[in-house]
Image (cartoon, rainbow, N blue to C red):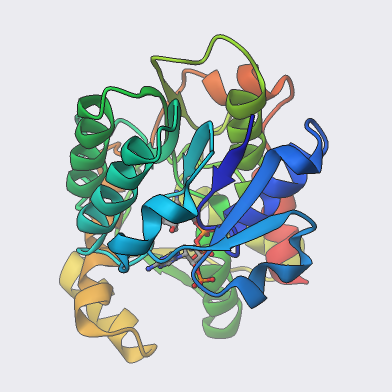
Length: 281
Ligand SMILES: NC(=O)c1ccc[n+]([C@@H]2O[C@H](COP(=O)([O-])OP(=O)(O)OC[C@H]3O[C@@H](n4cnc5c(N)ncnc54)[C@H](OP(=O)(O)O)[C@@H]3O)[C@@H](O)[C@H]2O)c1
């Protein structure tokens, strides 16, 4: 049984491979990497695989049982990239695909949802067994905002009083390892999110508590937040997308209280305070 993992050189992929090595023999794992040299330290076999080189993908996937598709990171190109590797998995005779989607992808107002829904459909249409891991926000996404808040004296955003049920990458990685190594996950779609939710004002309060400085949350209209992000050097399109995600968060797009993630990993999800402490180190 070979599990081939895309995104193996990324932050989630590395955590996932660690979690899988604790459960399965290393010989059952295969890292797929567009730059194999970057995967040389993973301690498992590596094959070259670039979503943008579709002709080479079926050979890269030859002999695998399961494709762990960690969603790609180039917004707007991902659906096409995912189509290439899903098609290759089918042609290579894989049995199953496990995919990292987006929390409530089918109803989400986040601009990210479209590519995830398209990918979920491609996976279902492939006829292969599947497990969809609809991951919520990574708490680590706020590391940059926390650093900016400490430097600037206020946390800024457009999420209003929206509650955010984020979890740490390590929590999502462990859930993926459970789905990959365990039984009974075929045909399932899991909505994965943190046990506890917080607002950006709560986040600012936690940063204040840990730094001993009063750092308030300042809510901005979307256009003003996007302008501030451009001022920090983000490209205009990305700044607007980030501000838009906050507006969606203000409407509840990042909230979930199902606690499916902690049930899957048999422990509470990582506390906000722990991620803030790591960001402040
Ligand atoms: N839930 C959330 O809050 C959240 C936040 C950010 C991202 N995400 C999604 O979750 C995924 C994993 O997160 P992460 O933090 O691990 O992201 P990451 O560190 O950016 O890792 C992305 C991985 O995708 C690989 N990749 C990119 N383009 C590729 C291509 N053309 N062919 C093959 N591999 C390619 C990268 O390889 P290289 O090492 O060669 O670049 C890297 O291994 C992201 O890709 C994104 O879809 C979710």
